[in-house]
Image (cartoon, rainbow, N blue to C red; front, side):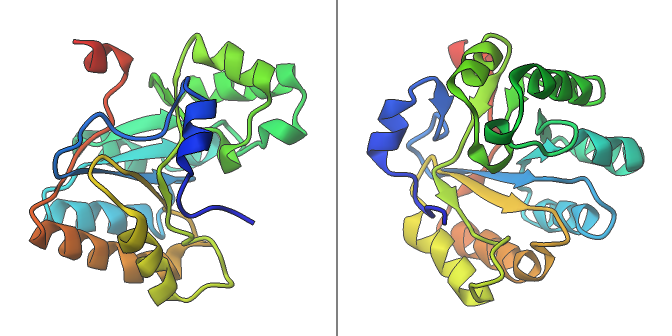
Length: 210
């Protein structure tokens, strides 16, 4: 069970999390979780390049270790990266110290002030601790590309129905999401580019405060 659109009351209840980007202009923030992997991430980079779009990639540390050249390509193309733990751990199912160690292991290979918890799941103490070091990035719109129960068209509809200026949209550069992502991402880029939108990086705290 998941919510495609994060309700406003949830966003207000967790004010230390980042739910939307800083712009109300025609700007969207595309994010990609769980990579980098050779089967999907290079294709995503090609799609973004064709629209001069920038994205933020929340990387799993073990995937970075396995695929350093792809990770470097993400950075060299001008995209942002974020920490997504080393082994894609759920905070709810993890002891705090184990979870913090896993985040730190990812930080050894992903140098970033941005953190997104896998599944969006953090215990209060975990969130409190990590907020001292990271911008904790959640989302405004969850595409559902990982969901085997929905169609490719429903995935696209999830995005265009709920996206607004400043939305942070979640996709996944993963094998589980590949079929839907290959259908939806080009359509989303084309749809919003025609409407005059830009696709920008998520800035970190220092950039937002300047």
